[in-house]
Image (cartoon, rainbow, N blue to C red; front, side, top):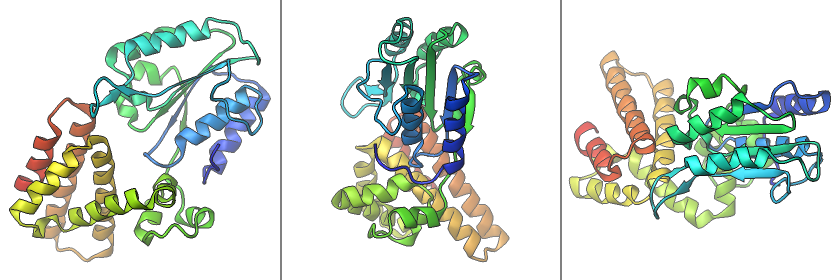
Length: 290
């Protein structure tokens, strides 16, 4: 597995749980996108299966679920059918280790029916079963699901730790300051793709000065990749918040910035959580708000 950057406290806690015997059968690792939740969860799963330092993917006693899109370019989600597979998998006796482990990545993308199906499994756990949920937007999960898990909150990683792990990523200080190692690592893994995202971000920071035609072109480009655009908007919000802290604003200007931040975050939620037309949502933000 890829080396994990940060989260020493959470990782040590999860190791201690594994070594001392589990008192819970379901765990929820939550926090911002790109901070390394998935890697920490995989490390935890490997430990639960007795694979010290190994990769659990492909093992008989490990099931990894990630959301899928029903059509190309559509929104990804966990269907009720895929979650029912969890119950079937956990009903079988472990083949190689003392436990069977299921990891549901992006668990906040479960449909309402899928969450109901999972709830039944959470309410009647097998003695050899462990379920690990990984989520960015914990508010998208039902309270009844969250209440049946042991929560492990995770936060952004200090800039110094990211710089120590990836000192030569070829990116500006801004990206290190976001506290999301996944962003910096992606810059080194695919510089060309990252350069395109960086240029889009630059356009967002100067959106108010762009002519109408360029705003329309940018909106069309961003609407073609809604998931990536929502993440890009999150970077944008972080940058605007940093600007607010660093600059001396008049009260009137500060109120205006808060309004813009609110609209951007509302657009992010709409892109991620609804079936709204991404192009129309971005057009509205670019043409009527900014």
